Image 1 (cartoon, rainbow, N blue to C red):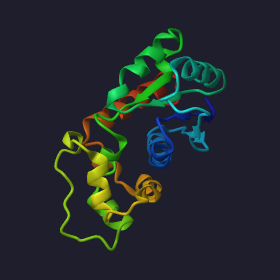
Image 2: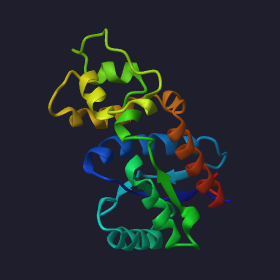
Image 3: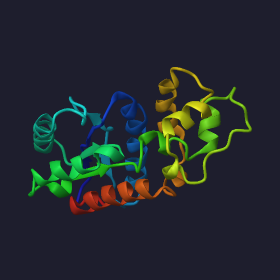
Image 4: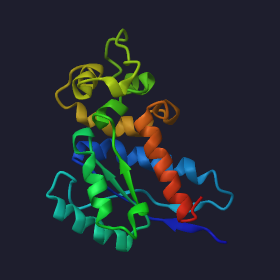
Length: 195
């Protein structure tokens, strides 16, 4: 069997989630591709046209179009919207296994707190005494903690892309919600015979 080409779009709640998740997903897919002897080609995740906070009918229409053109559709929601991914999957019973949920326990920003070295690189002038919380999924307000970790800058979002490129994947795998996403992505790739 020859090499195949993986196509994967991402729908997120907002632009700042995309800044972090797009490079993170690309790195995770590249790591998974190394596990197969044949490998597969992948040019990077594409972002959808709507955010998942839009009306459910709009999100379902977007997912329907993406399922026609892409192998796997990744849908991101934060904890308070967790059931929306399941509601979208129910609309596509024949393709539900091609819809991969990316749902942090609270917010995506918690995942950005997992790697102290990446945070220091993102904010090199920040006080070195700041420490990463032990269990980032239990942080009540990850956005506030991340803002503090990045030195309290008002435009801390500009560092999200850098964190997506540098946060250690092995550190993220210590976060249960990230492990679940990783396992779901792996399962979808196995079903489609990419792995």
